[in-house]
Length: 502
Image (tube, rainbow, N blue to C red):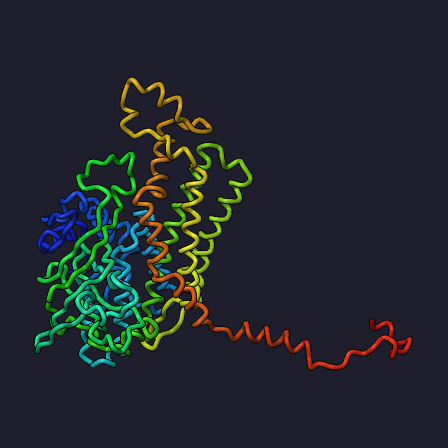
């Protein structure tokens, strides 16, 4: 089939009804429901860009085995230049949504590439699992499918393991000659309601007692026994003004609890089965972290550029950028943009060869960026809030600008610095509030804190996995200057000719 257009993506959703619930209502058609229709259109824009002659060569490549085009994230990278092609594609897609869509299709596309390249790792559980992951990669690539996933066990009792909460977490409950049956739940399935399929795998750290939970497989969102309960959306009726909510109206990524109710998975869609050792090695012995961090940090770069730009625009709109303390604040958050750029380039320049004839981005700079973002992005949000201050609280709605009786007041009292009109300033402040203050902005903040996992553990892993040879060489070289201890010479015992030494 090759790459899909936006309409083909939408048609695929319509042709595969799914068991999705939101606000106590079962959703009939996610492409027309007010909680999902806007984000479906935004996803369709991404797919349309793949078939647009103006951007096709940036976003896709020709698969040698098929002669068909596929998304760039599926392309095995043989050189640093190939990794740059990956980044250019990620950047283009992210720029179409200001970096606000954390789970655009390229995220799991490149994760699946990492798994397929590491087929030998999956073969430890049996050759059929290695064959399955390669065939699934090819199937998703050639049909240009949109995948979601859900990695986290539900927050029920964090003091207990999954096996101590048997009725809650996703696990295998039955095995037959045809496949396995899965029961239980996972979170957080971002955009799961509008995905084609879900790719399931687990975080490392599963104990031996939890073998029933050490699974990796894929199912269609529309398969029997697959159900999703979505969180409350920011709009249920689709009536919110774009002027007042320009970002949340267009880029809300709804999240869901993904429930498997005795769902059947055929063996050809199982990639890991009751294998604790393999599960716990998946992140370290495949390029999953390298590839996914390359995509997520590119997306984060766009988001940081956008958010820092909003902070600067707000400051300029009221003349606050003329004050030294504001300039310092803006200068500090600008550093984050440069850190991201530098880390991404370094990950490509210092790319690492794999055992499969490919290269992967260097992990260390990407992991550093992943642990940097949970603290850097909140500082940008705080800068927007600090500079805008009470201005957020006094902004009128877009409807107020349409009332003749208020025209004189709205024109006079909401204008900005340097001749900025009241309408333009209100438009900017509404955008900034949507990004930094509304429920939408709060979710974006929470996402950057936790999308890479527990920030404490992730940051600690930087130390536990450090390549410290050069640092320790410098330390030992400095220690050698001290030599061995010797008795201190007294001044009284020195000869006159020795005094120049003191």
